[in-house]
Every structure is written in C-alpha cells, then in structure tokens.
Amino acid sequence: MLLVYTHKITPRLRYTFKQICARILDVSVSFTTTIEDFIAHDSLKISYTRQPLGKEFFIRSNELLFEQGLNDVEIKVSDWEDTKCFFSNGEQSALPFDIFAASFYLLSRYEEYMPHVKDEFGRFTAKESLAFNNGFLRQPVVDIWALKFRSALEIQFPEFKFPERQYKITPVIDIPKAYSYKLKGIMRSVGGTFNDLFRFKLRNIYKRYSVLFGFENDPYDTFKYIINKQKQVKNKFIFFFLIGDFSTYDKNINTQKTKFISLIKEVGDYSKIGLKVSYFALTNNATLKTEKLRMESIINQDLYVSRNSYSKLNLPESYRNLVELEVLEDFTMGYINQIGFRAGTCTPFFFYDLDYEIQTPLRINTYHVLDYALLKYQSTLDKKMHLNQIINAVKKVQGEFVPVFHNYTFGASETWKDYNELFNIILDSTNEK
Image 1 (tube, rainbow, N blue to C red):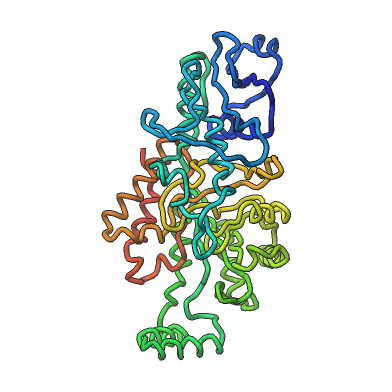
Image 2 (image 1 turned 120 degrees about the vertical axis):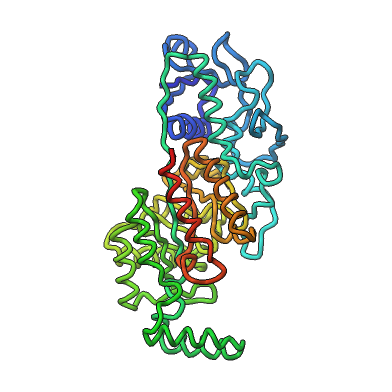
C-alpha cells in the first residue's frame, strides 16, 4: 500500500490518487494528515504538500486539488522527456511537475466547463482542447505520467514489486441504422424511392428493391461478419443499438418490428449490448428513461452501458442524467474528427462532478479512434500508419484501446473499402508479442 501524507485530504485528491495508483498502477493507496503515522509506515510512501517534511519522496502540490469550484487556471505546457506536462513545481520535488493536479485537470474535463466554441451540434471539439493545441492529443499522458511516477518510486523503494497490467481492446460497434433498406415500412420505402428519383440516384432504387425482394443482402446488414470476428477474440465487443423514436436525427428501425428485436437478441448472445441514446434523449431525461426501459425489455436484463448519438456531450448534464438512471458506464467521450485521447488517458475512470465535488459511480470509457476520423487519410497505407500509431501508444502503457466502428463500415461501399482490414489490425494487436 502507498501512504500519502498531505496537509488536507479533499475529494479531488482522493479521486486523482486512486485513479493513478489503484486503477493504473494497481497499487492500493491511503491518506494521512498525521506526521507520526507517515513516519511509522514502512512501505511505499510519499508526501504531497507544499513543503517536504525531510528527505522523503516528496511531490510539491499545486493548489488545484485543494480548491473547490471552477477558477481560471493558468497553464503553461512544457516538454518533459518524451512527453508534455504542466503545473511545474520546483527543484525540491521528486517530479518536476505536479502530475496529480495535471491528471485531475484532464480527467475531470475541467476545460470543457470553461467558455469555448462549440460545433454545429453543440460539441466540444478537439481544436478547443489543451491537448490538441499543445501537441499531446495522441499521447495517453495521464498513463505516461503514472508510469514515470512508478519509475521514480522504484528507485526510492527498490524492494517493492509493482504489478503489471495487460494491453486489451474493447471494440465498439455503433448502430444508428441496422439496415439501409430492410424493415423500413411502406411509407419510408416509398419516400426513399421518390427521394432517389428526385436526385437521379437510379442505382439506389435498383439496390433498394433488390434487397426488398430478397435478391441482394442489405448493405448495412454486416452482423454475421462482425459476430464471426467476435468469435475469434476473447475481448467482448459492445454493440450500441439506437432504439429511439424516428426523428430528423434518428432513423433506425422501429422497435415494433420483431425481426429487429430478434437481431438485438441474437447479437446479445455473443457480445454486450448497450443503448445508443437518441439525439432528443440527450436533453430530455424522461425520453432517456423511456429508451433505457425499452432496451431492458428487449435484452431482459438491466442496461448498464450507453453511448450518445453524434458523440455529443453536455457536461455535466449528460453524465448526471446517466447517474440518475443508474447507468454504470458510458462510451461517448472522444473526438469524431481526430484520433487521440480526449481525457488524456486510455484507462477507464469515474466521472467527477466539479459542481458537487464528488466522484460519481459512472465509469467513463473514452474512445480513441472513430472510423470517420480515418477517412481524412486518402491511402490505405496512411490509414494503417495512423491506426498503428495510436495502438502502439496504448500498448506502451499497457492500456485499453477503444475503437468505434459502425455496422455499415463493414459493407461493400467504396467509402469503407479498407476498413475490414483496419479492424483486423485492431483484433490482431492483442496477439502480438
């Protein structure tokens, strides 16, 4: 056990140290404000305060973990060996930066509470982030800092053996529309036909009726392929089905269709099922509750995991709604147009509510690459290179890689022609020595 001496034990301090020590380094941590208890402890120990007590392992603390509420935080990002860091803390400290305050700033998404420019869907964009603007978006810096902290402790306490964690993957399959043509009903099929006629997309009309009459497979119906891939790996995929009511933004199959229900149940036999929260449920808790109950009635078990449509997050409201409905995990946090680490980590963490200064039960799983983010790279070679770069960044810290692909990504569309191969790279990454 690691004992931390500090002048004040706060919720922020507990939250941050437990994330870095217990969840990343797999070492239990305890806290004390009593010098005698600290001196008597005969294993791992550090002081985290303003001044060292003596010659102990000391990290000079920034004030961020002892504050409450939101303040204008002055941040100057500097180079630190092979990474970046901020909140420098002077020569007396065992580490030149307060990695705990910096980690809290990133994990709590402090910057997303501050004034910023949103995109057309009201999302926080990568270009507004500290990480993007200072060149460390593609590094899981919180995990890197944790390992540097461990290395420093190993020098001070050579007899202590730290556990090693294993790299893993959690592929996410996002399903805003299960089928392109099937199960749409007469009105939607006729409407789609006239829409294609108006835009002179005659090939689409041929395709639609070939599917409806059973001559061709629906281009979005790639579920057998994905399930076969699931059978080849031990890491469970998570399928997020949209089951909200039809709207301008949400156009999946009606849950009154028994074949759609059967699809969800069949997928659930092999993989985990989550709720893709509809666009209007993001701002209406009653609608969200309806969708949650609807999914629970389909899968015949409690729903524990969700992901928002359009990867839209409004902090802290979006996460408070999930906490209120006892959803345990979320997979929304990430950037749709950029590869990287939105919260600076590839380790799941709990949502910390900055307004109430509490750690909530909601576990946040950030995703690190969305299939759309790879479209900007024209060649297959470039896509592979950037994908492998992010995989290797996670592997270096033995973290958890979360990619997001859509069901239609595995179809025959020319847009997604390379993506089966890219998905195989992700699955194979757990087999490499």
